[in-house]
Image 1 (cartoon, rainbow, N blue to C red):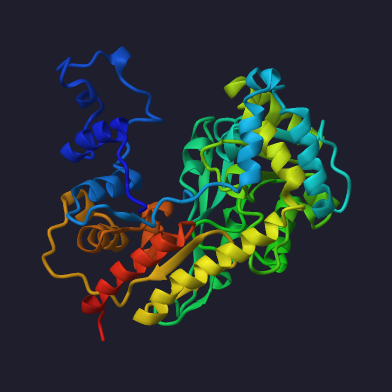
Image 2: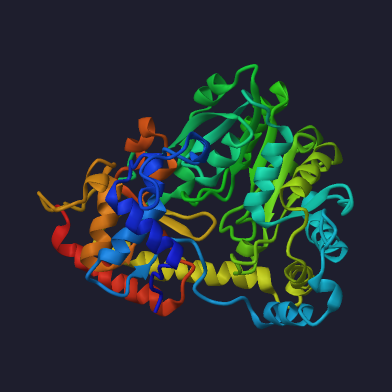
Length: 458
């Protein structure tokens, strides 16, 4: 069964966070030093933040009487990669060279495998030596991109909802984030519609551009919405970026999980490709989020600086798993792997989303990825429910998530965490569920979610 596990670190954080989520920095050292020296205080970039969604959900899981919790919140797979990928990883560990440093840009075998895999999608031959760099997961790859190009005061446009790591990664080099909200369909509270109906107001996007705009972050297929940006939408985004020479950082980590036509923005035309960095992830591609192998594809005049930043951040990435990823790409087609991935995830989506159809709860039908956003507008929370203060003052989706864990034992993620406070109301009735779990876990979650029936408004 898929249950939450609290590591010793998370338990210590939980003890600290439940005392007060706005604890001043000096409280971190309360047990050993009542007064903190100025020199021991943490940097502003990591201090003074309110309790994040992951801490709150872990706290709720630990406090819930419904144990073990069925974790439909965090986006890790509940099953292993296929045998041919595991065999590649195991065999790599037996080879001396695979247990030593890899070249900073990546193992030659993986660079070639990536070039071979993506060249047909680009419609031309990619140069593995100058147009691809391997990183320690997609997240470190994006941090390397920001570190390579963002100076203090430079502006980066980010669409809401956003992957929360974008924010800290942009802030680290001193970037200023300019948010442009994505809007759910007007009838999303009463009708199940395609995730593609979530939309960007392109007038809002145009107004967000200033002379200081250096980059724009795009995520397609999108987490958490499940939207695959249409070619027409990408053309509009690209036109703005080409006009103002804004670097596009396209987060395409779910690029093998799409259920509608998927266009990669770098492939629109040459003038777009020359300003685009495309991010990929072995963790998402091969059911192995713990492997932390990612890559960026882009023109040499951009990639060389991403590689330079990556070298300074972590020098090189884990060698045996790079080798395993290379073999996985080499053998994927022979195993019909990409088609199987799409088929299996589609089956899981259909299986799990049947509960929303049964309950009459509308949801956004995903076009890609492995998350589904359900709209809980019809769910009536009991009056005077005992929410802890740090949940009671957050948007309604946080209360929904806490309630779901406490009463039904199902964990989901409140998406307002991925919006600014000003725009959190846009998604306050939604919850995000990850369906990349074994079928028996999905069935367990569905059975528990039937407990919502008594809370549904007519």
